[in-house]
Image (cartoon, rainbow, N blue to C red; front, side):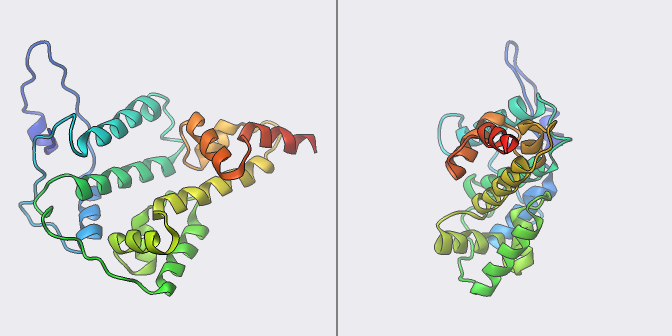
Length: 224
């Protein structure tokens, strides 16, 4: 069930059933709507309340929420990684408004081309602020375009999403820190600083990007 927090608090959970709530800010959802449909949500905006856990987009969204709960919250890494928190909240909000039925779901998002200079502004902003908890909405604002327009044009020009591009910049930043790390620095500490809260996934992405594990990179630099 997808509903507002005040309504959820009044739901009765049946005997021998488990009720678990996951809250995301309305402000984040409204920003995702405005960035996707280039309009303000109507006052009576609603998501479809009931969703299947085995069909459509909800199973993947549920997996993402469970990962957040089990891997990030349980490990108490959020305070050390505002980048991870900002990225997760924006990603979940965009996935919700772009994939789940709601009041604006039948309205086609605006699809328009943007100028190369606007793409360049978004890239320059991302490169300058990759180490801060910026979001795709921040990149779009720097380019003076909507989030949807930035997503579509990134795919057209670079065959990747703005989030993938930003993640690549952060991997490069993490590698730079690993190669310049003081003797007492750890991979987990550096990865967390750049928004990578799951060390196994970070190592996999690092190896895919640079052809070497971060631990090997760290040892190699220390031997020099």
